[in-house]
Image (cartoon, rainbow, N blue to C red):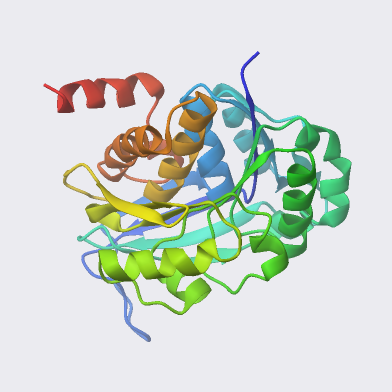
Length: 308
């Protein structure tokens, strides 16, 4: 029996407009391309894990609308156990409005919709699957009380808890003390630690602050430069693969989903990072969130080509 991953997080439908430049306040720009795709940080990470053949159950919520039903059908195709996903009568499935410029930078606005119904009561109803998990992977696009409760339940049952602290916000020590692995980017690391991450020295300093909460492994993602990996205050940079990016929307989510799946496959953190880098590299060369997330065979082919 494969080790069990539970992903807790958001489910959205993304409306993506590609532009030459990002709009300024009061400015109207003509888009060059429009794409509707499924997204949400939790959903993206679950899809990345599912496409890498993880044994993954997803906890989240959609509306009882047509788009919510279609998203659930796609999750099944992606190899995700959907039986725990809540369908909400009173709210629509979450929506994200995304602008992407020619440099692959983006700005995002989110209407959470049904995601707000992922509360403590819902987590209690999912207790049995949390108790069976080997790893729990979470982000911050759902109510914080649910995240705190889920981390506590998983930790009590000896699961490893991974937090991708996005979008950036303050987090209470009661949550951080239940985290085994945390994966912030530079902005999120600054919000959590007060340390501006600009190089390896500052990345090490920010990691040290997070270690003080009892977090064993800190991965600070540095975009095209790679990831600063710090385990028990021993750190190093693991470089990313060099590719031409056209859209970075789901790169971090893909990294997280594949990284934790490789840990479930008994790979070392460094081995898992390299595979996750490959997955993220493939993702940024494609448009959209879930449409850009690669399958296991694509990642393995990319790694083989890099080793030639």
